[in-house]
Image 1 (cartoon, helix red, strand yellow):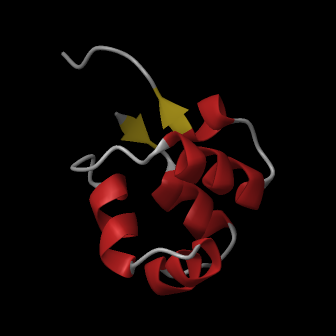
Image 2: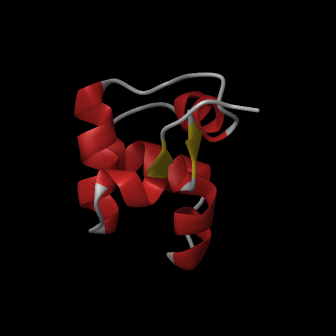
Image 3: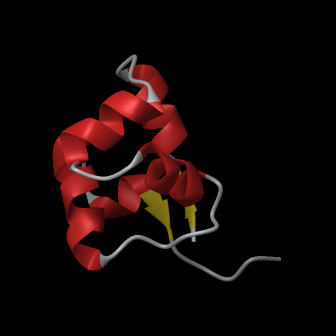
Amino acid sequence: MKNRIKVFRAMHDLTQEALAHDLGVTRQTILAIEKGKYDPSLDLTFKIARYFGVSIDEIFIYGETA
């Protein structure tokens, strides 16, 4: 699943480490999600959206890849 976490991190001047700490996950988890190698759990998906104060579909792009 594609996502815009890197964009939102940049808008909030956050490192992967800082975001990971605030969400209670590892930096490697954030990296894997950003690269599309790992789809977060529903719980973590909601945490990320709440953290940035946006809806899930503003961060995660669901759909078929070309």
